[in-house]
Length: 72
Image (tube, rainbow, N blue to C red; front, side):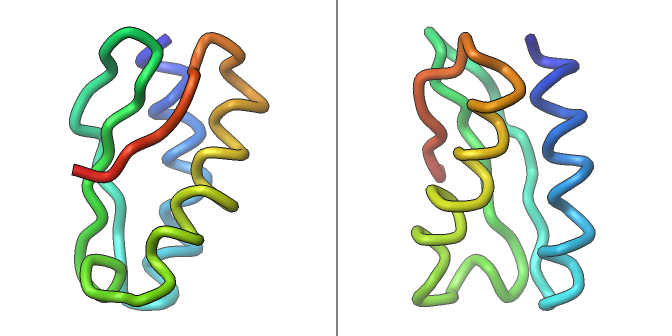
């Protein structure tokens, strides 16, 4: 599962980097993917929306075992 999640994050990363941010996989625990938003994404007021609407949606679509994505 970790490799699948990393592959999806790899697809999302260039979009975030284009806006001055980045994303890092911290870990996966009981179907919960934990990520860290970095750069411009770390302090962005829209970060939670990006996390849920872009990151979580894509990961859950490709890796059905994932229940949710959280920022740590």
